[in-house]
Amino acid sequence: MSVMFWVWLGIIVVTAIVEIFTMELVSIWFTIGAIIPFILSGTTTLALEWQILIFVAVSAILMLSLRGVTKKFLLKNAKEKTNLDLLVGKKVRMLERTDFETMGSVKINDVVWSAVGEHNETIEKDEIVEVVKISGNKVIVKKIEDKRDNRKETGELVETEEKKKSKKEEK
Image 1 (cartoon, rainbow, N blue to C red):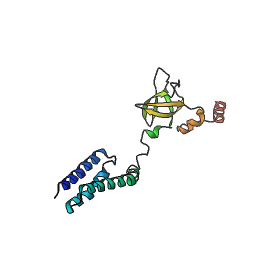
Image 2: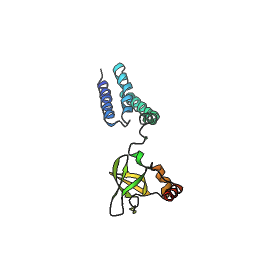
Image 3: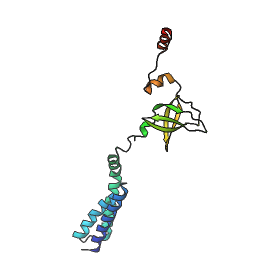
Image 4: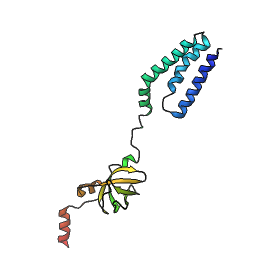
């Protein structure tokens, strides 16, 4: 066996180990590209220049043609929302007042979060707000203009004006 047989085997092993630790689909193409010169160096007396040319050509063709497809296939679930991403857009009630100096709080799915206004705006207790984003261990919220419609979205019962009037008349 020639020295290049062992060199190609070394390239295969090293690039495979690098790929295992990075999982970025970078060195796998070199691993596959080194297999053909590895086989050729063990079975023929092909010149070193041709082995290198085959290695570079196969690696480049594989990388250019398959990297996008395989990355899309392997990472197809990477674009799904996480549990925290699902909180963005949720409408909740402020438990404590917040302004540019103090942090308020909101309760989302039985968890109390620290909350601040989107532009350090003042938001009073019991106002309905929408979660804009999550920054560290706090949520950034903004006021909702039409509170009546949004109370329905938070799961609260909203009495109509007629029901309120009829209750007052009964008393």
